[in-house]
Length: 299
Length: 308
Image 1 (cartoon, chains in turn green, blue):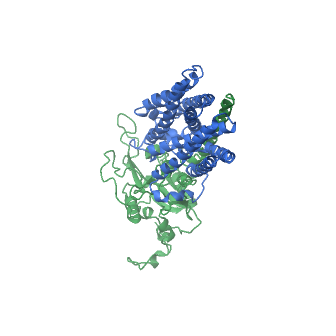
Image 2: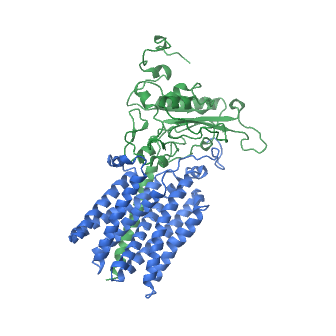
Image 3: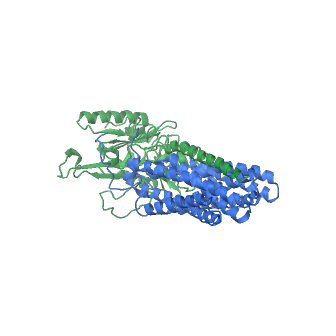
């Protein structure tokens, strides 16, 4: 870890105000409107500490929910929701599918796969394409955000999301999801989850640079013998499929996407609009013609 | 891919996507919107051809279509979770969103239905007919877009067969519209040819719907998303309520009405009642079984596989 040359200029623990372009110090990237930003989540580095979940809840003032044990794993968060915008999945590979309990997993991963899930900020975002009010929009950082003063709670974005991310809050009747810390990006701050991640499993940055970094990481893992490492959601990889060009939050995985509750071939719902409309309207036109035919027989 | 394909794993069997929050209100709207469009199309066709006795039928039909359009709009506003902002639907037009397409289809349909009804009520029957034609053409969109709306989601049961779902919805809209027009004709027209024509059209629409539903079931089985339509509680309701009592029975009765002249009226009455109930039940089963399918990760992951 190198120390940024600007770092010694702000040695105080208590600051008088925001450090300009603080993200340069914490994430090595300057945040400017008109560029594309995102998250690269390297699941091989995740230790399941849930600091990202806590940081997200703290920064975005999200209420607690599900204050019970799921009883199914160490994952008591369960899923992303209107009030939970980071969710750490815990996959315990007890048997690797073998009845005799033999383990194939390398010991350094302690039988666990962990992944901090988040809104993917899809390129061709199905939620945004489904939104009839324009409440969901694409920001100057190429992320996808719900404008709370416009959303009327029609709920259509909820089933439209191919990753089950966006959700309606029953407290206020609006749709909510990760904003990729839109307010923090505006003032040059790295998103809260990435900044709090102690192992750098969640990396914030400019998308093109993140893609290069992620490809280097995959190559390095392959060199070290971890041949199952691959990217999910980078261009031309699983997750960037069916009309989704790429995901602004993409992942390095070491097992099938479904193991992490991700679809292996998600698709863009808007591609199904025109074929179904044409089929329906054609049916209606044919039957209207038939109605004329049947009515003519009465004359 | 990291591991060879086999049985698709899930994450502790938990849902991978969120089900819609749509329930019986939206199911009722899809039925009501389709029925309004169907009635408008039927009575306008009869009036265009100047079928004897069609004047009364078209007036009652237009009144019903207008009332249903208004009722449908109210249902949609009730279903919003922030109802006071219903007008935000008109902020933009988004062609990728069937919800947005449908907003304007419903407004257009309601507007032309209103003008057509008023014109006919004040005796300007030509204006009424022209506006009725506009309403009927908007009705083609009304009858179809609700299927697009469901198909454009990630819900496996709705998205697996987008075209056939639209064929089923449009055919059901026209079948229920024909059933309503058949009942109206029996009530307000002395011409026995009208209920017969509407009944026969209803039979054709039901037949198309039946074929499309059998075809879509084959796709659902192939994609691996058919389980909610087979298991409890939607399976029995779908087979007995929708396919047999809601489609096959009225289809047979409409056809038989052509051969039993004495009992034709009884057949038309029963068939039309069954077709209307079947249309509502079909929408409710598709909607609620779809929500159930979204909660099944095995269905979604099976749907979200690469296919050649």
